[in-house]
Length: 226
Image 1 (tube, rainbow, N blue to C red):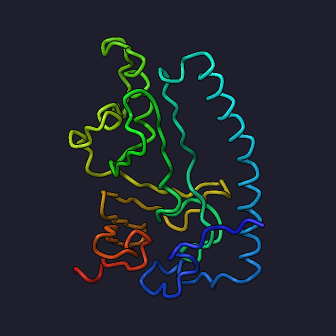
Image 2 (cartoon, rainbow, N blue to C red):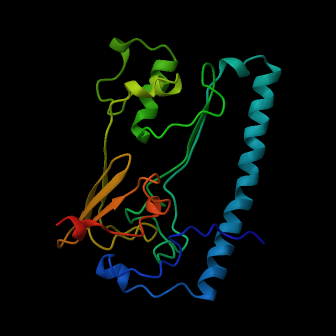
């Protein structure tokens, strides 16, 4: 049996500072935990084929002598809630567990084991791939929205100038993306501000240097500064 990770935000005890619709969610029950663990276990099992595929690709690249000349990029779709902040499923809320996704890149001149907290968007992948492929600037499409990650990959994060990214949530018909209220948010390296339709606001300090639980959005500090 594989147990889903239990983050500090799991089944959050005090949600009095959260939006009213989050406050209306009941605590996570034992049946909920069993369902969460079952879903997580199935997802882990499904990754075995992905792991096998990655292994086969790396082996093929190595045997052909191209591994050291190839960039391998791993990322994913949005994250999924497993009971964090009492949210038992879905991915439409602005809390970190859904919009924050993994990005791992290995390849020439990428320092092994290096980590960066630079703010990156999936729109950055296309210009990154174009630059890595050596496509001249004048031949790149004019509609590119993102930025090449090459400076970050080469260890020059200090030249990365993005200081914030936009978070948006809009109600729709997809049951996997339930949105309680339409919202807009701003995510910086160490903070997040969200405004919901109807007026509720959230502000979080995400800097672990101030408090190790900050990244888990346990304390909405918006009313503390107003």
